[in-house]
Length: 77
Length: 245
Image 1 (cartoon, chains in turn brown, yellow):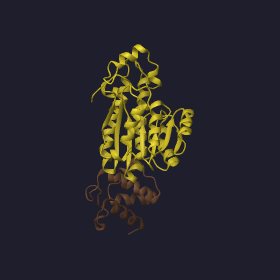
Image 2: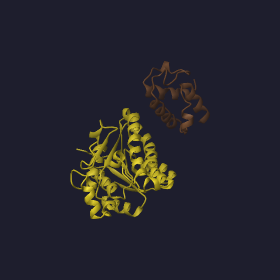
Image 3: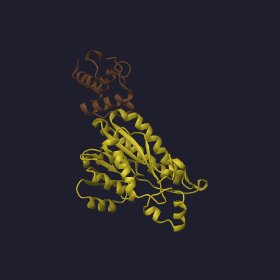
Image 4: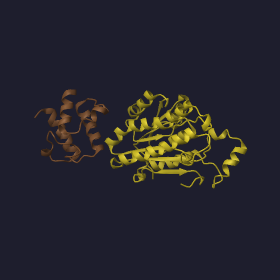
């Protein structure tokens, strides 16, 4: 696993209080990890800070799963 | 009670009578205040009166870019924005049948859209700190309507609906969003009324007098305080009984 994926996973685990094993590539924040829509906004905020990037609102809406997040950040960072 | 030590508050329309009083009252409770308004001179004057913990942040609320930049400027000047008071407002009164699109748009832009933009701009910091207070200054006419103020009443009623929707969304993050709806308040605006107009107004007010800016500021201070943490999505009417809502 890449460094980016580990860092993203740590944020997700801390923010949503879920077990690390559940944060797999296909895991949907809302459907699988119990996030509400505001949690997903906060996760994006946390990703922006961790990686020093800016994620515009329209791109943020496409980040629905752990895999989406890692993919987006890899491309942006 | 109502100790705001360590909190930073951004107040729009701080150059006006009510806004200035709100700033004084939050400052007296220990808050650092960011004074925003279109005219810089009265803001500087107020800041000089307050002394420490006062920052001047001029902003034209009809300029979208300037409005979007204001929360960041305020956070840089004060360290954070824990409390936002959307007090600025303009009027462009006209009979509905004569009201131009320009009069409609100008009032909606400053009174409602700028409020939306500022709320959006301060939320990020409030979400992170898990604490925030937004107080939107509406008006009794937002609830009752008022002839000649179709635009103003629409904006002020819109503010209440917007506040309630936002209150739902962010309540779980320790952020409250409330409105204060003043009735007739003694300000430079109401000073211009003649005696006949004043006595006609007073007949509709059970308290038999106009309210003061201090009485609006007291309501804002309460809603901004830690003690009001369980009050959200509400409208506090401060109108001497003129409309009991």
